[in-house]
Amino acid sequence: MRNIAFASFAIIVLATPQIHASPVLTSHVAVRYGDLNLTSAQGRQVLRWRLKLAAHTVCGPEPDLRSPRFRPYQACVSGAVQRAMASVSRPLLADAGQ
Image (cartoon, rainbow, N blue to C red):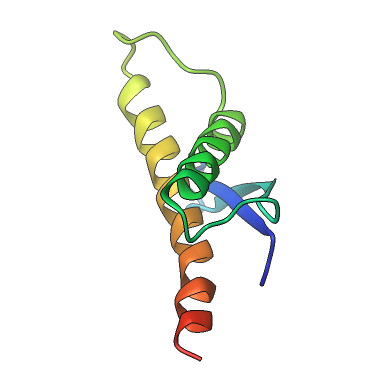
């Protein structure tokens, strides 16, 4: 079983008019979870907390609640946590099926 999850996010870079497709930059942070029992609710809760901390790191500083950047920031954090949890769940489900 893998013991590292990655919290990741994408930022669409503003392209110059000469470029037709915008490049996507992705950042990753390793989150260790080999010490957790992911079959327990407590273990999954701790993993989600660790992933959320990592997502805050890769998504940047949290903007003010009234800032127009607040919603994209929230989407970045929640999307990163969801993708990372899904990547951890897939191997667990595969192991349970064997």
